[in-house]
Length: 428
Image (cartoon, rainbow, N blue to C red; front, side):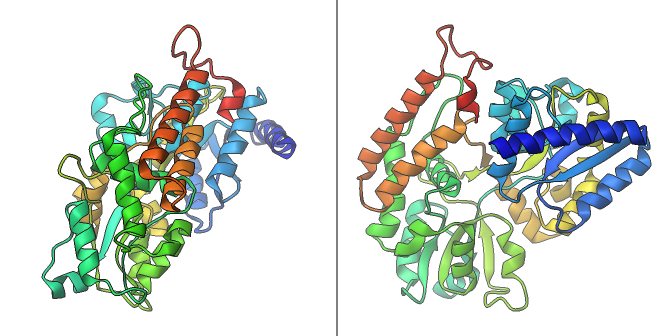
């Protein structure tokens, strides 16, 4: 943490020197390394259009949580080095609750905000107010071997039962598994579980009431489905409990799985010339039960404005520029990241983008509570314990619900749910 403080302090000094030597407003933003060069080009183009404003891109670590720590440390220092926050969707409740972000709701009319996919706006909110302009959106896709399903006369699964039955019918492990996903104890496991939970008609945390739904029948059913994939039906390989995105993608792309739950980045990789499954892949929404709905965990980034910034109007000009369709298209072409603008898909003749758009319309945000990181850690531990046979699904959901309720009670003030009263230790 000491190194993070030194890093943040040095940025403050850089910002002041840049303003005094260049004679322009300098907006600092921390982002991942610009491996494609697209951000440098867009920052330069923005400066050409707005000569009095310059974007200072601070290249931070690749890991999302490491950049979150740097932002947090900078804000806690009392003199943040950043004007813009390139924010992951799960940062918004924490940063907004701490009072670090400017409320952007009234910067645009409702019709302007409606240009974005609804899930990306929901993921930019805290307590009904908008704190981020979404630029990229992510959502889970069910990839499937359309050649194998067509040969067997099967359609893409609409329900969890369909997924299990088709997998059992067509698989022949270890050469070909039925269903691969992310079962490692990390954030990806929370995303996977949330989709199944909502698919069974359940919920994790109600942010308005702090009600926890993990130990309700839908929560137990969701975890039972995932454990059955590994332990009962054996349609997922035993190693799935150690898989993150890349391990599951590699198994699927090598031709050794029928179904894969993963993010849209898999599509272009699966269609490379050297890919064994090129031309053999279909895309569909995640399945559901009879009582639920298809759900895709929302991911993605966008730009927020630091409340401590002295240049908020200049920062808003950049938000307007970077979220416009021409710039969004260029980011997509360079990075294959999915845009959050509806018009990108509605004007696209590409059937793959149309299929992804259908999936993105089912996106759901993770619980927008300031304690999300701790709540996710609790869920991951208990789901992993069930997947590895240390607890039954019912035991795991009871334990996860109990710890989550304790977490929410511990961070609630005596005056009620005060969004700015969470201890700093809880915000780290």
